[in-house]
Amino acid sequence: MTQTAFTETPVDALQQGLANIRNRFLLAVYDHILVFEKYVEDIETSGATQATLDDVAARCHKLAGTAPTLGFGEIGDRAREIEMSIASREASQTADATWKETKTNFNTFLELLETSIDVWGE
Image 1: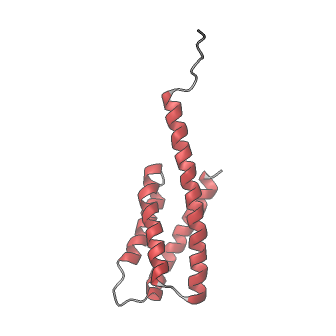
Image 2 (image 1 turned 60 degrees about the vertical axis):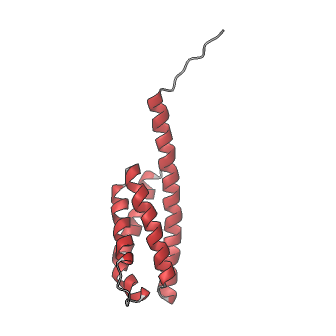
Image 3 (image 1 turned 30 degrees about the horizontal axis):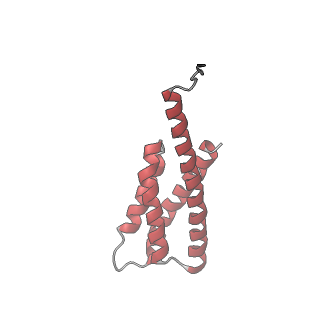
């Protein structure tokens, strides 16, 4: 019976698995960027809707939960800030008013996502 050499250690396998998860996360971030950019375009053209803001908050919620686990703590923190900003709006406040309050932080967040893709996606 011939034995074959086992060259991959459990640590190597774990690191490769984590690298694969991280790469899938970065692909998902890229998809979020595309959707976020479309929302910004729509809001700038037609105004904000609550449905759009709810989807932005939901996407930020996902990023806030996943990003820190994969070593992207700043993305997680910024995502949580956007999510909470949208979620804490006054009942009488319009979607446009909420967007106006959130827009600067959101644009900074979007730049962070784009930079992360540029740096880590290579």
